[in-house]
Length: 295
Length: 295
Image (cartoon, rainbow over all chains, first blue to last red):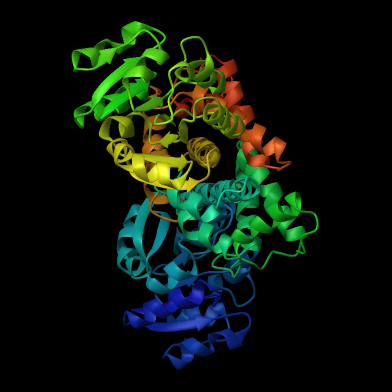
């Protein structure tokens, strides 16, 4: 199939690469065109704008940072909407506002008759490369079923979670779990260290019992060896928490834990840690508890 | 071996039963003596006080609610200390203060020459019955090695985590994880419900990705079917959070997430939910977000 992929970031590039390896003809575009080079080398065709990608492809994926970026890719100059047809399916792998997602889907349907799936992913760059992402998909069931094969190239858990926008809603929940689990990791490790308990041993025991989590098993050891390289960046988790709290705010829903998590990730950004991995939240706890620590 | 077990609560009774089934001669005591009846029926001997149990046994386990209860069992009238010898090992399965634990161990050693392991457990009544608890043990390595066989009757993860008191320190960390993971469960489910996303589907996807935890997999479904029966009671988790925050306070350690969790579990107690399972925290979120809800 002719596939388009717009957004060659830390997630988009390996995901597009997996579609190429699955045998699809791939047309890519990125705002900074040099990021397309590795995929062009692997056999993809880079094009100058989203409209050109849409002209070439039956399904166009989007994977860009935030709500405004998706709007620009679809409805901006040389955007998808300019070339979209009734047979086109747009699949948005970005993590953006569920409300805006519903509006984009409606607008694109009204203007061009095209279909829309919101399909945000979880699993980090590791999952993107391995094709083992969890993908939470919102949209018409029938469109989802038509695209399931493509999505299963990208992820090992592909679930239709509801109407358009519900993929993003599910992702907001997912990020709330990730953020609060990271707080638990940072606080558990902080308490262990300050009480003179070997944090490695603590993680070993706790992760095998009722206190276990993906975050503790995967990010806990990174915190201990001070490996703060991004699998997933603080700036992005912070944005996702903003989206979740905006949704909660509109729904008049009180989520004190998520609100606290958002404040602490904001502190991490204030300390210049935005482009480090989410586990670098541990540095804020070091700072809170050891004022002499260099950030 | 002749074994004593003091405290026939929701955890102590099945743990003592496993020691009996492993072929040990078992001497039990409980403040309310009728709770010993099932074990007596299974072959144990019930005695009137901890001193009598100590006279009969080479190793005496304790499993009672709080720090003061352990002190009473060891140093009170007819307590363990009255009959303790140099060959005695006291193993405390309770969850109590690490600082008090160190003091109890020192005092018992000084008064009677006996040895002490703090060995709090994680895994709930299910793990207690199945003998699959995680046990975090503080104390002399040599005493630990002598008692390892007994502990392995009770748990599938038995780890020596450091000197006496460190078992309790590790348990405080463990409970911090459990409490914050429960906040995440309650908030994720609340957000999903209020946004019109099926929470069952949300749990299905999130628990398979980077947002997964033991709590989500095990307590999430209980929350959905409003099964608030205690595997582990809110009153006890609330006490454990108090112990953790007391430790953190003494160490001048800032743990905002754990502090928030403590407040919310306190609210649950204020609403009369103390003897329900920890997952009943979800009812506080219902109350926060749907004022018409009957508690």
